[in-house]
Amino acid sequence: MVTDAATHGRPVVLTTAGRAWIEARRDRAVERRRRVDDELAAERTDELISERRQLDDQIQELTALLRDAVAPGDVIDDPSVVEIGDEVEIEFPDGERETFLIVHPVEAGMDDHRTSSDAPVARAVLGHRPGDRVTVTTPSGSYECTIIGRERIG
Image 1 (cartoon, rainbow, N blue to C red):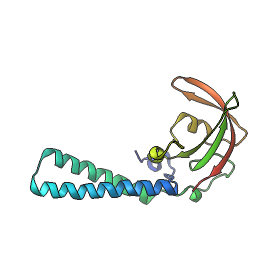
Image 2 (image 1 turned 180 degrees about the vertical axis):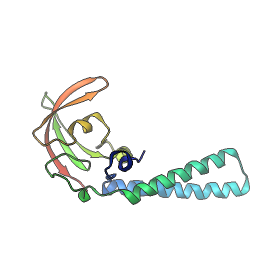
Image 3 (image 1 turned 180 degrees about the horizontal axis):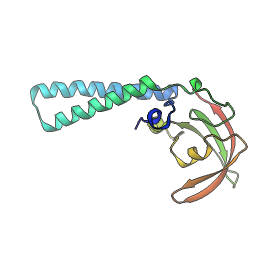
């Protein structure tokens, strides 16, 4: 889930809101781990042992993510190019416009405004500039859109 730095040679970028959301997820996992330990003290079951292992893995992964992640503003980049942490406005051929925030996949589920950097539309616009026309390739086909603007969000 959180292997960007290792597999792509770039840091994981988390927005401020995304970092807070991940911290809350980690804190909930830590609290659940405490409750599982209390339950295990009373009764050892395979289910509780398995849940504790899963929680340990989740806590370790989220802690590493928070430790290693950087804020969008900390990434040295070309400010005119669309990057993770940018809010992007695109226009479709019919004139309809859509705005979304490109984020690391781990924080994409926070709300409907966020789009995973792995999503087809995000992959199409990343590295391009406002004014560029890009092709979005999806499992159901391809379409073109134009990047209208971008704004760095922290």
